[in-house]
Amino acid sequence: MRITDLLDERSINLNGAPHSKKEALDQMVELMVQSGKINDKEAYRRLVYAREEESTTGVGEGIAIPHGKGDAVDRPGLAAMVVPEGVDFESLDGEPVSLIFLIAAPNTKDNIHLDVLSKLSVLMMDEKFAEALRHAGSAEEFLKIIDDADTKENKADAVTEVKEEGQKKILGVTSCPTGIAHTYMAAEAIEKAAKAKNCFVKVETRGSGGAKNVLTQAEIDEADCIIVAADAQVPMERFNGKRLIEVPVSEGISKAGALVEKALSGDIPIYKATGKDGSTSVSSAKSGSIGHQVYTQLMNGVSHMLPFVVGGGILIALSFLIDGLSIDINSLSAEARANFGTITPVAKLFKGIGGTAFAFMFPVLAGFIAMAIGDRPALALGFVGGMMASQGKSGFLGALVVGFAAGYLVLALRKLCEKLPQAIEKIAPVLIYPVLGILGIGLLMNFVVEPIMGGINTALNNGLTGMGGSSKLVLGALLGAMMAVDMGGPFNKAAYVFGTASIASGNYDVMAAVMVGGMTPPCAIALATLLFKNKFNKEERENGPMNFIMGLAFITEGAIPYAASDPLHVLPACLIGSGVAGALSMLFKCTLMAPHGGIFVVPVVGNALMYLVALVVGTVVSAVLLGVFKKKIAE
Image 1 (tube, rainbow, N blue to C red):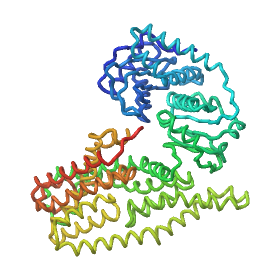
Image 2 (image 1 turned 90 degrees about the horizontal axis):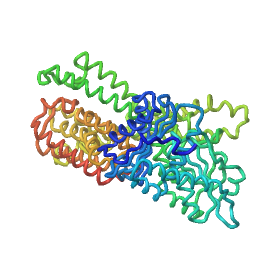
Image 3 (image 1 turned 90 degrees about the vertical axis):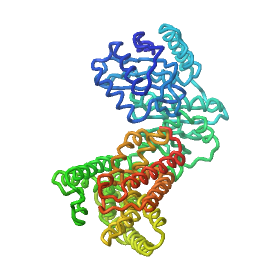
């Protein structure tokens, strides 16, 4: 089967003019439908969008290859569109896309069409080929350019490469979650980069059609270096003892030259296989550096925590809104104001459900950080440690610490169990790991993490109390910054407790500075995801605007996933903006008699207009700093 067997003239548009990525995808789906290969247009559209949510199919160099596989497709097919003016497709390199191929794959065991689609992906790596397609004058010419290149590629494939004496030998493995386009494009990029350095090269592709061009053990034994560019599970035991580089599949496409240079340098660590199944799940992949490994482990916890933060946070925000619309807050006693968000029955219901979701936040964070390090046995340890952190004084920071501790504790137990008799070693995952692991985590939390965080909280409270009579401006800046520094952790809690205690003593300006400082980080995150889209990944951009709701409801935790994924850049920006907001609140002599509620308790804020000004200024400061501090990302 050839590429042109899948591409119908009716599904080619040489003058596309979509104004957005959504329009481009919708127009491509319409083109595909015209070929008669789709039995359910909307179902196929959902497949295409679902794939795009996993990661962008804008592979760079002005090219995008979206795809959808499922029962909505009767026969494999292609649709193509040239966009002369280009369209923003959230590509890996951030550049507009001018050439789009849409793939339709039926949900069948027969994957012959995937070989053809892999050819297309490989051909697209040739700049001259892609440029010729962009300037085709007709659909017939477009098809001829593809057919000629396909014929040339087939002839090239017929030539078997033989390793020459003295040549360096580089092997590769590429794989992406769907295994259609990125897999083969990364393979082609690595092959071209290696051949340019006069290296013998062979790349195994692990796509939807299974593993192709599989590496033999003899080839692996002779290899000088192995490059694994994958975002999906790859069997790794076979590479034990070899020099190996692990990166995301996107780097296999965009940084193939640099990867080959690194492989030839010889300065590559020796891979040591771990685990019994001999495989690794390279969800975000590791670059080999300790810092990047910690980052990917952290991201595993953050991505699983996010739904609990968003779902629970919005429900809690709704509870404040319901109470704010249902009652006159000025008529409430100080004790009643402390229960704001649970006064009316409906608000209490929403607050209870949202609070339950929030209760899972720290256990899930710690559990999935631990799992990324120690695999499934570490999950239970992380959950237990995270729950203890949420119930104690350590909070967010405690969950982070115990997540990593749980993962490495399981690795240590696994190492110890390797020395046990085989009969005992087999029961380790169901008996030794959970019993000794949970006991160890419990002792660590009780005797190390919680006492340290408790001490920090006590010291902070004592310091704040002594500072109350000094500079109000400095106090406001400090309280605002503390609300942002760990977002629900010990510093945040210390500032909040100090604010609520100040209400009881009649000092309402302190609580105002505390709350505006806590509202600023989520609002700043939301604004930054709209202003600086290239600094956030797709999931962060989609969830960003929801932080406006959480921020305005004084739910600082909405910013936690963003801070946890990039603490070195996000935390300083949020800390400065919150400090500015807190200082301005004090400067404007704003007061607050309610200990919670955010924007919904504005009726009881003294000097409410200037209070909103303080919030806006702090939000803008943090958002701008996020745009400056954070680096551009390649999805």
